[in-house]
Image (tube, rainbow, N blue to C red; front, side, top):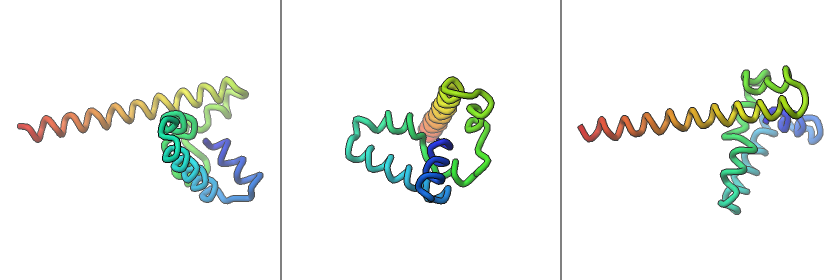
Length: 105
């Protein structure tokens, strides 16, 4: 995601915030118009570009490809981000299930 934001900043002259918002708008549009692609769009573009742009230095996951150059680094970075997203989803699901059980008691 950081690479795409940087490309929009350098080639389109957008600020980091504008680039992140642009990506979010495109994601929303494609997901709305083509719901069958929503999962793929989410996997490719991530949950939200805005937090990545707000933090210029990026998270550790955004820096993996800086240490492992080329396509392999980008693939590992993508895999790590997907794993983190899925872990977050599982945590949210667990919290929801716990809350449902708690409400039944």
